[in-house]
Structures are given as structure tokens and as C-alpha cells.
Image 1 (tube, one colour):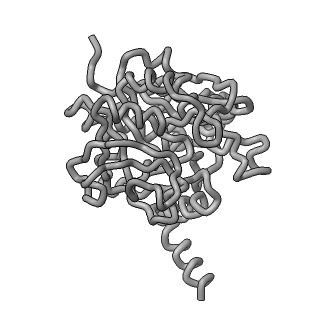
Image 2 (cartoon, rainbow, N blue to C red; image 1 turned 90 degrees about the vertical axis):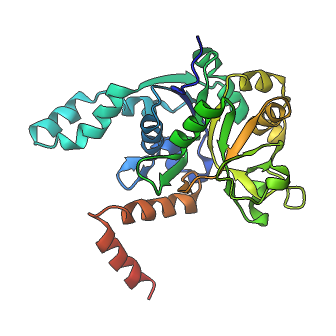
Length: 297
């Protein structure tokens, strides 16, 4: 029997990270640190805190460092224990003990839709979340995060549920944009049904200013629509094209959610994420604020 409870997630992490070259020549961009934790760890923590039990990591060549990170490093970890620094291992051990990480190779970079399609065998007929591997969200409500919120909405409605954020007209070419009909400029507190999705439209072709920032919960039917689509924007299989087909045949809802979101796959977004996370930490906040105040005088 298929349950509406979302227990599986897919994290696409197969990108080459060209925007961070040469740093990413030997280090996956998802392993770049935000203060003292790699980007991917923030994403996996969000999934774990949403009740996800199985994570499918979609990876490409040269990404084994991500798998190694969640493996045991005996020499390093034994030294931390001997030095009385077990606390540093607490969070990592919590993830190891409570979540299954399954790695799947995406042999060719054929688009986000293709990356999600690589997880089909493992996901089966179950609903699942998708969290982009270089997008970090920080909820203003510490008891709930974006993925948790979307999973709850799916449990209630049995309809695919996605997070949307408002963007400026000159930013529509960076995102998938949803068509919400007459509800395009509402606050979406209770959600709105998506009428269509367009990948990176020019501002005069955008159906709304509501963008898809990288958090989704889908019913497994999305795989059928991915199988139907042809290469689209940039010659790739776009997830947004499959979402458009889904929206024409079934209910898919868009929701707003009060959270900060950082595109850590972008240089400026990565720098801002480091500053914001550091300012949230009591051990760094005061000194960092003092430095910034002196720097901008």
C-alpha cells in the first residue's frame, strides 16, 4: 500500500560547478563550506528534519568526495574522540544513524529532469521530495522548514506541492516561473493551483513573478511526464517542462513559505550565505559585525 507520508528525497548534485572553477576542479561545489559545514550538509539536514528517511544523491563523475564525507574516517574521528572533541561528531553521527544515503550516477549532464529520472527505480511509486543540492534555506520558524512544510501539504492534499518565491521582472530568466492565473500576486498562504510552468522566460513572456527556488514534493506520476518531454531549454530535459505537463493533467499547488533562501551555487549567493549563517551564530556574530562595520566606513 502506498502511503502519502513523504519518506524519500532526491538531491541532484551532478553539476560541474563551472561558476566556481578552479576551486571545483577537484572539489564538488556541494562540498564547499558555508562557515564550517559543506553546502550539501545543510540540505541533508533540512531533509532529515522533515522526516525524510531515504535520500537519493544524483551524482556525476568526480563527486565521490560527497559519499566519502558521510562515510567513517577512522583516523580523524578517533583523534577527535581522544582529544575530547566528540561533540564535533554529534551532528554527523545523527545523520548517519537516521538517514539512508543512496548514490546514483548520472552518466551525462542532460538536465534536471533527467537527473530526477535517474532516481525512478529507487523511488518507485512513492511520493518524494526534491531539494536542489546548492540551494540553502533557513526558516524563520526553527520548528519547521520548507521541505517539512511541503511534505505536510502533500500529506493533506495528495497533490504535488512546490515552494515559490517572488522575483523582480529582470530575474525571470534565471528561474522556472509558474502560471497561477488570477492568483499570481496573492501571498499564497493557503496555496494556489499551478496552471503551467515555463523555464527561464524573458520578462515579457513570464506568466507571473513567482519563481521555483528549488524545493518540491512530487507524486511519482512526475516520472511519466519526464519520460514524455523532449529536450527543451539549453537542449536539456527540463524538470519544469514535466511539471507543466503535470499541471495540465493533475493538481499541483504552489505555496509561499517564510524562509531565507541562498543560491550557494552562485558566487555572490555563496558569499551572502556565509555571512548570513555566521551572523546567526553566537560565536561569530559580534566579531563579524564589528569587522563589517569597520570595513564599510
